[in-house]
Image (cartoon, rainbow, N blue to C red; front, side):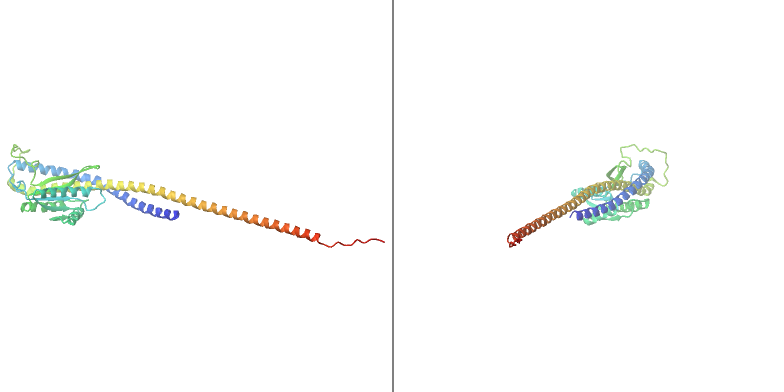
Length: 334
């Protein structure tokens, strides 16, 4: 029994060691990609800030009548752009984003508003399809390495739905990358642009530089605002990719450490099973030797008693024979 248990434990240890090699490799790959993804986030920041400043300047110059800047008087349908990952093994990264988007949808539904869904990543698509949510557009296959073309496709889907009047508000839900150990799920207003992006009517229409716009500011804004939306989506995609790598690195490190602890525990159990097997074998050997020794002693004693009995009977027979033998007459010399 102990030997069988030892074999089972040995197989389990080998299986866990194989899994540990995979998790360690995933951890190293994710760690190597974090720095690259963080560099991409930082590299896209100047363009995003510059185009944001240009939009502010155009708005300050009197171009605030663009359809992408005008808020709807009544919000009847809210579009959510949910940015998640294509793969798992990254802890709570996908779950946190999906649940934040689902809570927002449910909150709007309680207020009597309809929803629209643009999902990025297979995990988000599978989640909402399984729960029979209505998905207006789905994009996948690039969550760990997004490009600006992917952002343009997503931005075109969100912008066209807003301009067509199908949606009144577009929010983006993603994970903002802060550091390798800190990522925050964020929901931001994408369309119409918030007051942080354009000056309010109470602010003085100041322009940071002396621009002369040709053609009009309205025409330029109509061409520039979709690109601004694309830039913000691209920034969200890059943040999501960096956050996914960081979450996967932490999750795989935790899995590797847990595998090491489990291997240690099973090794101790296997050693105990081996010791039990050795102890059992020793006890069996000692018991067998003792049984053999006892059996040999009993046989020797029986043989000795039998030999003594035979000797005694032989002596008794000889004595009896001498006692009953006839007496021989003595001869006298005359």
